[in-house]
Length: 221
Image 1 (cartoon, rainbow, N blue to C red):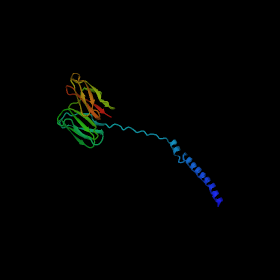
Image 2: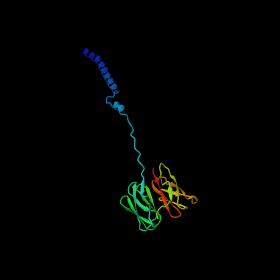
Image 3: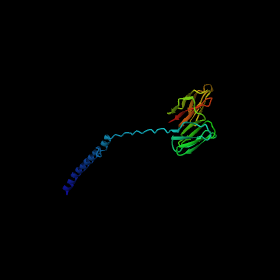
Image 4: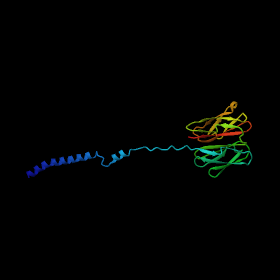
C-alpha cells in the first residue's frame, strides 16, 4: 500500500508537466499560418478599383434656327440627349404653336409672321431652344457661332458683323441664361448663364432691317 501511494505521488508531477508542455506547444502553433491566409494576402494585395466619372447630361435641339415667313408654315424640330420625356413650348404663343410628334420630334406652326423661340425641356430639368425668324439671315454674322460653358463657367462674349446697326440681342431661354448689351455699342453682347442650369440655349441678334443670325451656348456640368 505504501509503495502504491509513493508511486502515485511521484507520477502525478510528471503527468502535470507533460500536460503543461503539450499546452505550450499548442499555444506556439497558433503563430503559424496554418490556413494560408497570410500567404494569399501577400500574393494578392488589395487594390482599389477606379470608377469612371459619368458624363454630363446635355439636351440639344436640331435645327437651332429656322425661318417662318408665312402663316401656316410648319417646321420640324428634333430633340436628342436629355433624360426622360420631352416637353415642348414656345416663347410667344400668339406667334406660333408647337405640337409633339413622337418621342423626340415636334412640329412648329406659324400663326403670325414674327420672331419666336421653340423650347424643349426634359424630366431632368435640362433645356434646349431654337430661334425662328421671319426672314433669312443675310450678310449679318455672329462670332463665335457656338460656345460651351463647363466646370462652373458662366460667361461668354459675342460680336456681330455686317447688317445695319443698331442691333438687338435676345436669349432663347432666360431660364438658362440672359444676354446684355449697350445701345451705344450693340455690336457686342455678354451672355451670363444661370448657375446650376444645364442645356443648350440660342442667342439671337437682329439688325435694324430685321436680318437675323444666332449662336448656340451649351451649358454642361
